[in-house]
Length: 95
Image (cartoon, helix red, strand yellow):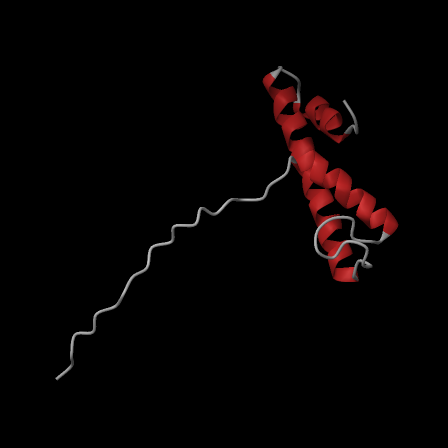
């Protein structure tokens, strides 16, 4: 026969906080780190970026560009532009 075991449950009283940054500021820092090829923030500050870490930053920057393009495309369609015009607007860099 199996015995019932009492399991002590401890509550987590420490409040966990999320570290986040405004995406365009993170992208700006990532671009600077890729140019200098050196960590500029956090515990690895001053160490050289590995190829993997540089790739992560590159992927993040591409994602930011994709989001900006999608936003501009949808915004242009909502303003009554044609799909071709919206596509041209979404591919322009800058405002």
